[in-house]
Image (cartoon, helix red, strand yellow):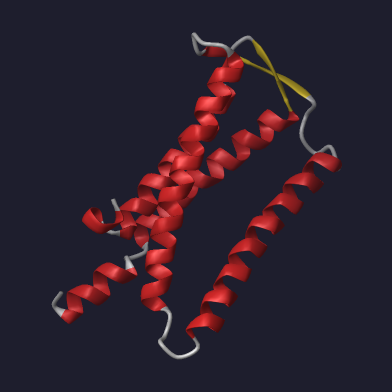
Amino acid sequence: MVDHLGSKYAFLFCHLAFGLILFLFLYRDFFPIATGATLGILSMAFGFVQAVSSIAMMTEILYLIPVENKSFSTGLWLTLYQGGIGLSGLISSKVLDLKILTDSWVFMGNQMTHYDSLLLILGAMVMLMVVTLGLVPSVLGTSQSHQGT
């Protein structure tokens, strides 16, 4: 997907898929198969999309990193990337710890918990990121078009 369509479209696809999968977790009781199987399928789909996203990110970052200090640049990027993942986990855990979200609510006749509220918020935030991704040009697309490749 990254090679044929470019990383911008891969990022757009991934963000739309991430948001959709997070929302589908809320609909887990509406699928005609067992809840455990539904959650397994959704988790596998999330992992697949995460793999596509990782390939697109590494393609972009390896294209941008200068030849000199390549190891340092890559290490710094990976550190910041993993730090962002850790920070989002800390924020989510603190939101749950402070009991900011309601413990119980009803969605289409099904009881939901504060974890479902968190999934709803995160899914909405990922979908909002799609709008910002549409405004950012792909680094690979612009750079390669200027080089004539």
